Image 1 (cartoon, one colour):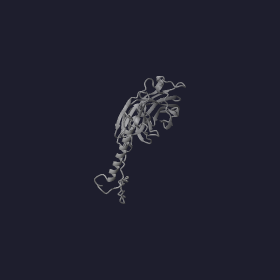
Image 2 (cartoon, rainbow, N blue to C red; image 1 turned 30 degrees about the vertical axis):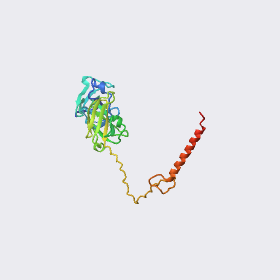
Image 3 (spheres, rainbow, N blue to C red; image 1 turned 180 degrees about the horizontal axis):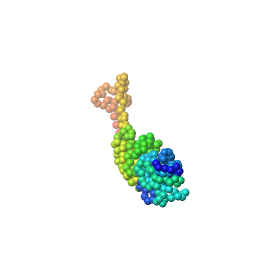
Image 4 (cartoon, one colour; image 1 turned 60 degrees about the vertical axis):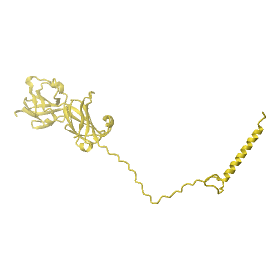
Length: 323
């Protein structure tokens, strides 16, 4: 690279800017500073501080600047870079055209800043363009295959801790409340449960995903999966989508109680004597006609009753007053 023995100062302002940002990029994104980003400036390696700034002493002339982790950070695949000579202590959003050394995009994270004047200060605003992001949150639940009625009411409290998911490109594990979240790029997001076959013992899960933050409740996915993989389409930028993920589980059959077989008696049952009616008082037998007719005692008793009755009747007649 061409240069001069007299050096200059090159300052990097490391920024990020959503790919869908509109209007003046300085106004829209200049406060979105990124710390901890590595650059190679000339032959030396630098890292941005908490304010997203690197200050390097460089030789005058052409200076190469390379961002080390460009593809990971510039998720939209490009950066807009604006380098200008500063004529005042405070950075100007737009310099005179003669002071602009580089203005354009890079898709590789590699820029050569040409003709840096000796003794000058050059500031390069380096805007990595990023894909808009959203948040996807999983509520991991289990629900018996024979559950009926509203599945939310029946099973939403059956949380599962320690279940692994891949949300987009991020691996997460549910916490003690059965919740796991990941920041994803807006758009279509694929969710995979790696241990689906083990946990969803009934072979399927019901998944319900809806937008939460704006209160619209827009449903993005509602249905079953038999593979443990679901793609949620059109996840909106800047929003949170909650997916209730109900693994259906087999219901164990309740064992039927079987009556115990009756054991054969080891001894013959004791015979119980039939109750014998106690005879009431009986008149003496005469021995004559006992089998077929009234006994003599019975006839005598009848005659006696007849005589007594007749006597009372006669007495009654006697006491009747004369006519």
